[in-house]
Length: 192
Image 1: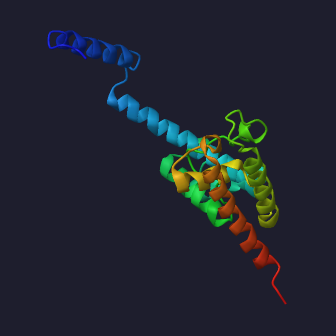
Image 2 (image 1 turned 120 degrees about the vertical axis):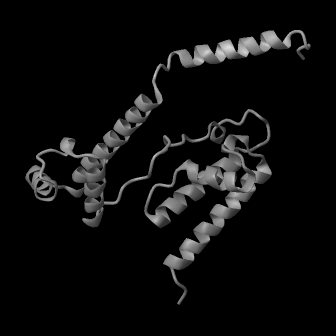
Image 3 (image 1 turned 30 degrees about the vertical axis):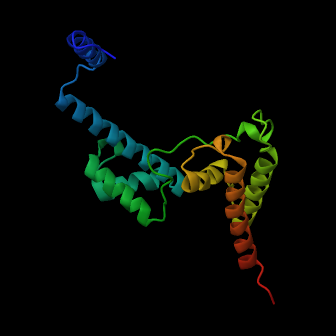
């Protein structure tokens, strides 16, 4: 704990540290806004090109759309509102954008699935969660990532990763996944 006599120097050190941290950022607020606007424009351009590719538009058809709707030869000539309109037009053609900003890299399989060095015996629960994720993916017809189970754990306990969970918490995740698999199985295979 700092004494009263040390407080002015501590405050001075904090101010100096703050100044050093912001020294590399010599942008005015206007420059910062302009940079953000340019980054947003580039993101929209990327969306346009992704949509064009996913819709399978031929280059001639794509350029015809640009010429007819916006009187430009290239999407690089469009401003931000026009890019928003072009993205909306591609959505009306059936394009569905992927996940929004903030997408994270796919979460790797927890290391405790093969080796649990805590001595709590969580390996069997992790293997069961992996099997339930595989069943769920098969029933839904898509890949079910480990992040799905982590999300369930997060909603139940606030923990981010399965490695941090206790056996009891893993059992709760297994229960939720099991109920989901059972519900989908009943839905797909009706009783006669």
